[in-house]
Picture (tube, helix red, strand yellow):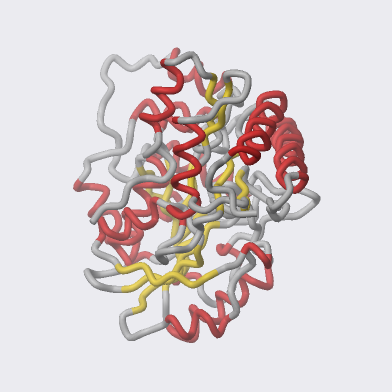
Length: 390
Protein backbone atom coordinates (compact mmCIF):
# COMPACT_ATOMS: atom_id res chain seq x y z
CA UNK A 1 0.00 0.00 0.00
CA UNK A 2 1.28 3.45 -0.92
CA UNK A 3 2.18 5.28 2.33
CA UNK A 4 1.03 8.79 3.18
CA UNK A 5 3.68 11.49 3.05
CA UNK A 6 4.73 12.56 6.57
CA UNK A 7 5.70 15.87 4.96
CA UNK A 8 2.29 16.64 3.46
CA UNK A 9 -0.34 14.56 5.25
CA UNK A 10 -0.98 17.19 7.95
CA UNK A 11 -1.62 19.97 5.43
CA UNK A 12 -5.43 19.96 6.03
CA UNK A 13 -4.82 20.63 9.75
CA UNK A 14 -2.47 23.50 8.89
CA UNK A 15 -5.09 24.96 6.54
CA UNK A 16 -7.73 24.76 9.26
CA UNK A 17 -5.41 26.50 11.73
CA UNK A 18 -4.74 29.27 9.21
CA UNK A 19 -8.47 29.69 8.56
CA UNK A 20 -8.81 30.49 12.27
CA UNK A 21 -6.16 33.21 11.98
CA UNK A 22 -3.26 31.21 13.45
CA UNK A 23 0.14 31.80 11.85
CA UNK A 24 1.77 28.49 10.92
CA UNK A 25 5.55 28.23 10.56
CA UNK A 26 6.12 25.56 7.90
CA UNK A 27 9.16 23.56 8.94
CA UNK A 28 7.65 20.34 7.60
CA UNK A 29 8.80 20.66 4.00
CA UNK A 30 12.06 21.47 2.23
CA UNK A 31 10.64 24.54 0.49
CA UNK A 32 13.26 27.30 0.91
CA UNK A 33 12.25 30.95 1.12
CA UNK A 34 15.47 31.89 -0.72
CA UNK A 35 14.66 33.73 -3.95
CA UNK A 36 15.04 31.78 -7.20
CA UNK A 37 17.91 33.35 -9.22
CA UNK A 38 16.69 36.08 -11.57
CA UNK A 39 18.64 34.59 -14.49
CA UNK A 40 16.46 31.46 -14.31
CA UNK A 41 13.20 33.42 -14.12
CA UNK A 42 14.25 35.68 -16.98
CA UNK A 43 15.03 32.71 -19.21
CA UNK A 44 11.38 31.65 -18.97
CA UNK A 45 10.06 35.22 -19.29
CA UNK A 46 12.15 35.74 -22.45
CA UNK A 47 11.33 32.39 -24.08
CA UNK A 48 11.31 33.12 -27.83
CA UNK A 49 10.06 29.93 -29.47
CA UNK A 50 6.61 30.03 -31.05
CA UNK A 51 5.81 26.51 -29.84
CA UNK A 52 6.49 24.87 -26.47
CA UNK A 53 7.59 21.55 -27.93
CA UNK A 54 8.57 18.16 -26.56
CA UNK A 55 12.26 17.91 -25.81
CA UNK A 56 14.45 14.85 -26.34
CA UNK A 57 13.34 12.16 -23.86
CA UNK A 58 16.71 12.41 -22.10
CA UNK A 59 16.44 16.20 -21.91
CA UNK A 60 17.43 19.15 -24.07
CA UNK A 61 20.90 18.45 -25.49
CA UNK A 62 22.25 21.97 -24.86
CA UNK A 63 21.16 21.61 -21.22
CA UNK A 64 22.87 18.24 -20.81
CA UNK A 65 26.05 19.63 -22.38
CA UNK A 66 25.96 22.56 -19.98
CA UNK A 67 25.46 20.17 -17.06
CA UNK A 68 28.68 18.39 -17.99
CA UNK A 69 30.48 21.72 -17.53
CA UNK A 70 28.82 22.20 -14.14
CA UNK A 71 29.98 18.75 -12.95
CA UNK A 72 33.49 19.37 -14.28
CA UNK A 73 33.85 21.98 -11.50
CA UNK A 74 33.49 19.07 -9.06
CA UNK A 75 35.94 16.84 -10.97
CA UNK A 76 33.14 14.66 -12.29
CA UNK A 77 33.73 13.98 -16.00
CA UNK A 78 30.56 13.20 -17.92
CA UNK A 79 29.20 13.17 -21.44
CA UNK A 80 25.62 14.27 -22.25
CA UNK A 81 24.75 10.59 -22.75
CA UNK A 82 25.59 9.92 -19.08
CA UNK A 83 22.67 12.18 -18.06
CA UNK A 84 18.91 11.68 -18.28
CA UNK A 85 16.78 14.62 -17.19
CA UNK A 86 13.71 13.74 -15.14
CA UNK A 87 10.69 15.59 -13.84
CA UNK A 88 12.51 16.26 -10.58
CA UNK A 89 14.84 13.91 -8.72
CA UNK A 90 11.68 11.93 -7.91
CA UNK A 91 11.28 10.72 -11.48
CA UNK A 92 15.02 10.15 -11.76
CA UNK A 93 14.88 7.82 -8.72
CA UNK A 94 11.98 5.92 -10.27
CA UNK A 95 13.99 5.52 -13.49
CA UNK A 96 16.97 4.25 -11.47
CA UNK A 97 14.94 1.75 -9.46
CA UNK A 98 13.08 0.46 -12.51
CA UNK A 99 16.32 0.16 -14.49
CA UNK A 100 18.39 -1.63 -11.85
CA UNK A 101 15.86 -3.78 -9.99
CA UNK A 102 13.11 -6.21 -11.01
CA UNK A 103 9.81 -6.92 -9.24
CA UNK A 104 10.52 -8.34 -5.78
CA UNK A 105 14.21 -7.37 -5.72
CA UNK A 106 15.56 -5.74 -2.56
CA UNK A 107 17.27 -2.41 -1.95
CA UNK A 108 19.09 -1.63 1.31
CA UNK A 109 18.66 1.90 2.68
CA UNK A 110 19.95 3.23 6.02
CA UNK A 111 17.01 4.62 7.98
CA UNK A 112 15.74 7.21 8.66
CA UNK A 113 15.57 8.05 4.97
CA UNK A 114 13.64 10.44 2.71
CA UNK A 115 10.08 9.24 3.12
CA UNK A 116 9.26 9.10 -0.59
CA UNK A 117 11.88 6.39 -1.17
CA UNK A 118 9.25 4.04 0.29
CA UNK A 119 6.69 5.24 -2.23
CA UNK A 120 9.11 5.03 -5.15
CA UNK A 121 10.04 1.46 -4.15
CA UNK A 122 6.37 0.44 -4.00
CA UNK A 123 5.82 2.06 -7.40
CA UNK A 124 8.71 0.04 -8.84
CA UNK A 125 7.69 -3.20 -7.08
CA UNK A 126 10.90 -3.15 -5.05
CA UNK A 127 11.31 -4.21 -1.40
CA UNK A 128 13.13 -1.81 0.95
CA UNK A 129 15.41 -3.50 3.51
CA UNK A 130 16.18 -0.81 6.13
CA UNK A 131 19.22 -0.85 8.37
CA UNK A 132 19.19 1.34 11.44
CA UNK A 133 21.30 4.47 11.90
CA UNK A 134 20.97 6.00 15.34
CA UNK A 135 20.56 9.58 16.50
CA UNK A 136 23.09 8.67 19.21
CA UNK A 137 25.85 8.42 16.55
CA UNK A 138 24.55 11.48 14.70
CA UNK A 139 23.09 9.06 12.09
CA UNK A 140 26.50 7.84 10.89
CA UNK A 141 26.64 5.06 8.31
CA UNK A 142 25.88 1.69 9.94
CA UNK A 143 28.83 -0.73 10.13
CA UNK A 144 29.63 -2.97 7.16
CA UNK A 145 28.42 -6.00 9.17
CA UNK A 146 24.90 -4.53 9.32
CA UNK A 147 24.82 -4.24 5.53
CA UNK A 148 26.08 -7.80 5.16
CA UNK A 149 23.40 -9.10 7.53
CA UNK A 150 20.74 -7.47 5.35
CA UNK A 151 22.06 -8.82 2.04
CA UNK A 152 20.12 -11.75 0.54
CA UNK A 153 20.02 -13.42 -2.88
CA UNK A 154 17.41 -10.79 -3.85
CA UNK A 155 19.53 -7.76 -2.93
CA UNK A 156 20.40 -5.68 -5.98
CA UNK A 157 21.22 -2.20 -4.66
CA UNK A 158 22.12 0.08 -1.77
CA UNK A 159 20.75 3.61 -1.64
CA UNK A 160 21.99 6.62 0.33
CA UNK A 161 21.29 10.34 0.45
CA UNK A 162 24.40 12.49 0.93
CA UNK A 163 24.14 15.06 2.51
CA UNK A 164 21.22 13.34 4.10
CA UNK A 165 17.55 14.17 4.12
CA UNK A 166 16.10 13.94 6.81
CA UNK A 167 19.10 13.95 9.19
CA UNK A 168 21.57 16.47 7.74
CA UNK A 169 24.34 13.88 8.08
CA UNK A 170 27.26 14.18 5.66
CA UNK A 171 28.91 10.85 4.76
CA UNK A 172 32.70 10.92 4.82
CA UNK A 173 35.11 9.67 2.16
CA UNK A 174 35.85 6.68 4.43
CA UNK A 175 32.15 5.80 4.72
CA UNK A 176 31.77 6.01 0.92
CA UNK A 177 34.77 3.71 0.53
CA UNK A 178 33.11 1.21 2.87
CA UNK A 179 30.08 1.26 0.59
CA UNK A 180 32.34 0.79 -2.42
CA UNK A 181 33.80 -2.35 -0.86
CA UNK A 182 30.34 -3.78 -0.15
CA UNK A 183 29.05 -2.93 -3.63
CA UNK A 184 32.08 -4.54 -5.24
CA UNK A 185 32.03 -7.64 -3.04
CA UNK A 186 28.35 -8.40 -3.66
CA UNK A 187 28.03 -6.96 -7.18
CA UNK A 188 25.38 -4.39 -6.25
CA UNK A 189 24.32 -1.01 -7.57
CA UNK A 190 24.89 2.09 -5.43
CA UNK A 191 22.16 4.70 -5.95
CA UNK A 192 23.34 7.95 -4.40
CA UNK A 193 21.04 10.95 -3.96
CA UNK A 194 23.32 14.01 -3.92
CA UNK A 195 20.88 16.88 -4.37
CA UNK A 196 22.23 18.87 -1.39
CA UNK A 197 25.93 18.78 -2.40
CA UNK A 198 26.34 22.57 -2.20
CA UNK A 199 25.11 22.74 1.39
CA UNK A 200 27.95 21.55 3.66
CA UNK A 201 29.00 23.38 6.84
CA UNK A 202 31.94 23.94 9.16
CA UNK A 203 34.49 23.49 6.38
CA UNK A 204 33.28 19.97 5.53
CA UNK A 205 33.42 18.94 1.87
CA UNK A 206 31.03 16.72 -0.03
CA UNK A 207 32.55 13.47 -1.35
CA UNK A 208 30.61 12.16 -4.33
CA UNK A 209 30.10 8.46 -5.01
CA UNK A 210 31.15 9.32 -8.58
CA UNK A 211 34.71 9.60 -7.23
CA UNK A 212 34.84 5.94 -6.18
CA UNK A 213 37.32 3.90 -8.19
CA UNK A 214 36.62 0.40 -9.46
CA UNK A 215 32.82 0.66 -9.22
CA UNK A 216 32.10 3.20 -11.96
CA UNK A 217 29.52 0.91 -13.61
CA UNK A 218 27.81 0.31 -10.27
CA UNK A 219 27.10 3.95 -9.32
CA UNK A 220 23.90 5.82 -10.23
CA UNK A 221 23.83 9.41 -9.03
CA UNK A 222 20.61 11.37 -8.50
CA UNK A 223 20.71 15.15 -8.59
CA UNK A 224 18.27 18.06 -8.82
CA UNK A 225 17.90 21.79 -9.39
CA UNK A 226 15.14 22.17 -6.79
CA UNK A 227 17.14 22.98 -3.68
CA UNK A 228 20.34 24.13 -5.40
CA UNK A 229 18.60 27.11 -7.00
CA UNK A 230 15.56 27.29 -4.72
CA UNK A 231 13.40 26.31 -7.68
CA UNK A 232 11.42 23.32 -6.43
CA UNK A 233 8.48 23.93 -8.77
CA UNK A 234 10.41 23.67 -12.04
CA UNK A 235 10.58 19.88 -11.50
CA UNK A 236 13.96 19.15 -13.05
CA UNK A 237 16.30 16.45 -11.75
CA UNK A 238 18.82 14.01 -13.20
CA UNK A 239 19.79 10.37 -13.28
CA UNK A 240 23.51 10.06 -14.00
CA UNK A 241 25.63 6.97 -14.60
CA UNK A 242 28.62 5.71 -16.57
CA UNK A 243 26.87 2.37 -16.99
CA UNK A 244 25.77 2.38 -20.65
CA UNK A 245 23.39 -0.57 -20.26
CA UNK A 246 21.61 1.01 -17.28
CA UNK A 247 21.27 4.32 -19.12
CA UNK A 248 19.97 2.58 -22.24
CA UNK A 249 17.31 0.90 -20.11
CA UNK A 250 16.46 4.12 -18.26
CA UNK A 251 16.00 5.92 -21.58
CA UNK A 252 13.18 3.50 -22.41
CA UNK A 253 11.35 4.61 -19.27
CA UNK A 254 12.08 8.24 -20.19
CA UNK A 255 10.66 7.66 -23.68
CA UNK A 256 7.52 6.12 -22.17
CA UNK A 257 6.73 9.43 -20.46
CA UNK A 258 7.79 11.40 -23.59
CA UNK A 259 9.90 14.26 -22.16
CA UNK A 260 10.77 16.30 -19.06
CA UNK A 261 9.20 19.77 -18.56
CA UNK A 262 10.34 22.23 -21.25
CA UNK A 263 10.10 25.46 -19.24
CA UNK A 264 11.73 23.77 -16.27
CA UNK A 265 14.72 22.84 -18.42
CA UNK A 266 14.94 26.36 -19.85
CA UNK A 267 15.08 27.78 -16.31
CA UNK A 268 17.50 25.11 -15.09
CA UNK A 269 19.90 25.58 -18.01
CA UNK A 270 20.02 29.34 -17.38
CA UNK A 271 20.52 28.79 -13.62
CA UNK A 272 23.85 27.05 -14.24
CA UNK A 273 25.26 30.52 -15.01
CA UNK A 274 24.64 31.61 -11.41
CA UNK A 275 28.05 32.62 -9.98
CA UNK A 276 29.64 30.76 -7.06
CA UNK A 277 29.10 33.87 -4.92
CA UNK A 278 25.37 33.02 -4.97
CA UNK A 279 26.09 29.78 -3.12
CA UNK A 280 28.45 31.52 -0.70
CA UNK A 281 25.62 33.83 0.39
CA UNK A 282 23.01 31.07 0.50
CA UNK A 283 25.29 28.81 2.54
CA UNK A 284 25.98 31.61 5.02
CA UNK A 285 22.23 32.11 5.43
CA UNK A 286 21.54 28.42 5.97
CA UNK A 287 24.39 28.19 8.44
CA UNK A 288 22.77 30.95 10.54
CA UNK A 289 19.44 29.13 10.38
CA UNK A 290 21.08 25.82 11.35
CA UNK A 291 22.60 27.48 14.42
CA UNK A 292 19.22 28.81 15.57
CA UNK A 293 17.55 25.40 15.32
CA UNK A 294 20.43 23.37 16.74
CA UNK A 295 20.98 25.64 19.74
CA UNK A 296 17.26 26.09 20.43
CA UNK A 297 16.49 22.36 20.41
CA UNK A 298 19.38 21.46 22.68
CA UNK A 299 18.39 24.15 25.22
CA UNK A 300 14.96 22.54 25.68
CA UNK A 301 14.83 20.14 28.62
CA UNK A 302 14.49 16.56 27.38
CA UNK A 303 15.17 17.44 23.73
CA UNK A 304 18.22 16.63 21.64
CA UNK A 305 19.50 16.86 18.08
CA UNK A 306 22.94 16.25 16.57
CA UNK A 307 24.54 19.14 14.69
CA UNK A 308 23.87 18.63 10.99
CA UNK A 309 26.88 18.87 8.65
CA UNK A 310 24.88 19.29 5.46
CA UNK A 311 21.55 19.89 3.69
CA UNK A 312 18.99 21.96 5.65
CA UNK A 313 17.28 19.38 7.84
CA UNK A 314 17.70 17.95 11.29
CA UNK A 315 15.99 15.11 13.13
CA UNK A 316 15.30 16.08 16.73
CA UNK A 317 14.41 13.79 19.61
CA UNK A 318 11.67 15.28 21.80
CA UNK A 319 10.06 14.29 25.12
CA UNK A 320 6.82 13.17 23.41
CA UNK A 321 4.81 9.98 23.31
CA UNK A 322 4.05 9.91 19.58
CA UNK A 323 5.37 12.22 16.86
CA UNK A 324 2.31 11.88 14.60
CA UNK A 325 0.01 12.77 17.49
CA UNK A 326 2.25 15.63 18.62
CA UNK A 327 2.56 17.20 15.15
CA UNK A 328 -1.21 17.07 14.66
CA UNK A 329 -1.83 18.46 18.16
CA UNK A 330 0.42 21.45 17.38
CA UNK A 331 -1.91 22.37 14.51
CA UNK A 332 -5.26 21.40 16.03
CA UNK A 333 -5.05 22.28 19.69
CA UNK A 334 -2.10 24.57 20.34
CA UNK A 335 -0.97 28.08 19.62
CA UNK A 336 1.37 30.48 21.35
CA UNK A 337 0.52 34.14 20.78
CA UNK A 338 -1.62 33.00 17.85
CA UNK A 339 1.29 31.13 16.26
CA UNK A 340 2.18 27.47 15.87
CA UNK A 341 4.69 25.33 14.02
CA UNK A 342 4.38 22.46 11.56
CA UNK A 343 6.91 19.62 11.63
CA UNK A 344 7.10 16.30 9.80
CA UNK A 345 6.75 13.33 12.19
CA UNK A 346 9.95 11.31 11.88
CA UNK A 347 8.06 8.01 12.10
CA UNK A 348 7.33 8.49 8.40
CA UNK A 349 11.05 8.51 7.60
CA UNK A 350 11.57 5.03 8.99
CA UNK A 351 10.57 1.84 7.24
CA UNK A 352 10.65 -0.14 10.50
CA UNK A 353 7.37 0.20 12.39
CA UNK A 354 7.69 1.81 15.82
CA UNK A 355 10.84 3.82 15.11
CA UNK A 356 10.95 7.61 15.14
CA UNK A 357 7.92 7.98 17.41
CA UNK A 358 9.73 10.49 19.64
CA UNK A 359 11.44 12.31 16.74
CA UNK A 360 10.50 15.02 14.26
CA UNK A 361 12.19 16.27 11.12
CA UNK A 362 12.75 20.01 11.03
CA UNK A 363 13.46 21.85 7.76
CA UNK A 364 15.30 25.09 8.56
CA UNK A 365 14.11 26.78 5.37
CA UNK A 366 12.67 29.97 6.90
CA UNK A 367 14.47 33.18 7.82
CA UNK A 368 16.22 33.47 11.18
CA UNK A 369 13.49 35.56 12.84
CA UNK A 370 10.76 33.13 11.80
CA UNK A 371 12.85 30.21 13.01
CA UNK A 372 13.35 31.86 16.40
CA UNK A 373 9.58 32.32 16.69
CA UNK A 374 8.97 28.73 15.61
CA UNK A 375 11.45 27.39 18.17
CA UNK A 376 9.75 29.47 20.88
CA UNK A 377 6.42 27.89 19.86
CA UNK A 378 8.00 24.44 20.23
CA UNK A 379 9.45 25.29 23.65
CA UNK A 380 6.07 26.51 24.91
CA UNK A 381 4.20 23.59 23.32
CA UNK A 382 6.33 21.03 25.12
CA UNK A 383 5.44 22.65 28.45
CA UNK A 384 1.76 21.86 27.96
CA UNK A 385 1.63 18.88 25.59
CA UNK A 386 -0.52 16.18 27.28
CA UNK A 387 1.69 13.38 25.96
CA UNK A 388 4.98 14.73 27.28
CA UNK A 389 7.12 11.84 28.51
CA UNK A 390 9.70 13.52 30.82
